[in-house]
Amino acid sequence: MKISIDRIKKEKKVVLEYEDEQFQNKAQREATKGPLRLKLVLSLIDNANVRIKGEVEGEFLLICDRCCDKFLQHKEIRFDEIFELEKKEITERMIYLDNKIKDIVLTSFPIKILCDENCKGICLGCGVNLNKNKCKCG
Image (tube, rainbow, N blue to C red; front, side, top):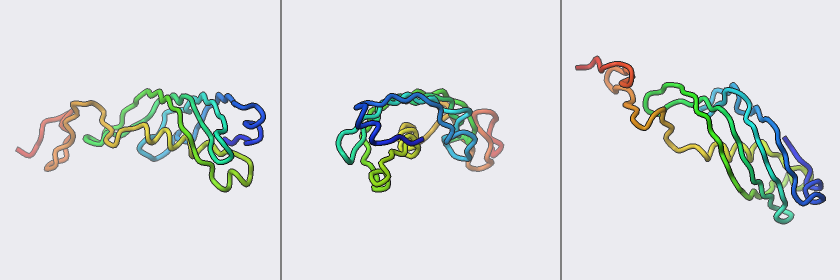
């Protein structure tokens, strides 16, 4: 998704509501089950910075860092960020939102994603998921 810098200058604030499919069916840690729903308000801070305030909502298909199981998590991400415009955006007079939204989504997750706070993980010896089975090592 892209939006004209001139439109934002003219309207002062631009409100956008749309669905974003950039994470859908991806082979990455933070893929989504369906499209993300976005509600954004864009305004220019100056000629080199844009403020994006809004909300991203969707169902994320995550992988637990302890047991490696996939699980689904509904997430609502509220944010208010200022982004420095890239040279390409300034030259073309267009703001490219996809990478900015990707940054917001990816930084909203903790470093270690867990299916449950009490996840037991996998046995380092036999590889069994300790949430589902007893260890076969001993």
